Image: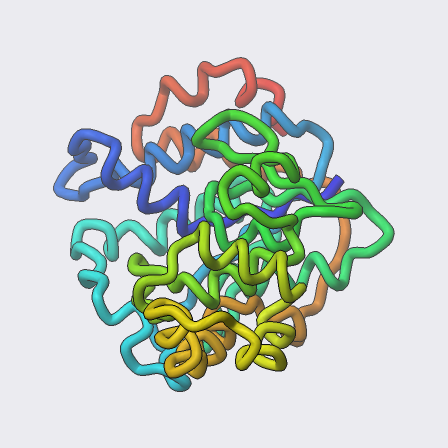
Length: 277
């Protein structure tokens, strides 16, 4: 099995969930939290391959399409910025294949890996809703926050549609966390009803004049272009030029790396003992 890690999700959770932790004059709480999470994850999925998908910066092709994309987000705190190179090094120490692509997000790397890996089981490890559109076939999703696999029923409960239609629901409803506009006033319930009725956003566009007269439907008609734009922002790119090689992930001087920062408790974990060279 090949595990695809949404590294950014782990980084931010580690930073904001952990109390401050210093090693000398360096803050390392996010690094510790990330390594602790990877210790658990690698123990859960032994003898498998891990690909760590990383964001390469805030400027992406999406911000070129729509400059306001994620413009509402605060800059990464300096204390976290300083730990990013160490977290990337940690990925290598755990034996992960690390991939980042300028101009693209970790989601796009994961989507491209899913498309390229057709003959093996693929497991996405992420709590992000945008990746639910990839669920199905040889692709599973494990939510590390809820400690469970995401099922099609979970997707239906959250979005009111099956996984392959999540993209169009997101396009209609938008996403305030990423500053994706969507159509104002259209929430998940209305979006799901429309997509289930017309089959897709394209189906809705083709039949938009058939919507019965109402204040909300008038808004949908006049602002459908926002949904079309939003689909470009939430659609995952799966055509990146990535070179993939497949091998079971094995640690590389992991113990010495952890001891460099006095993460002795992690070394003592049974899962880490199993990872020793």
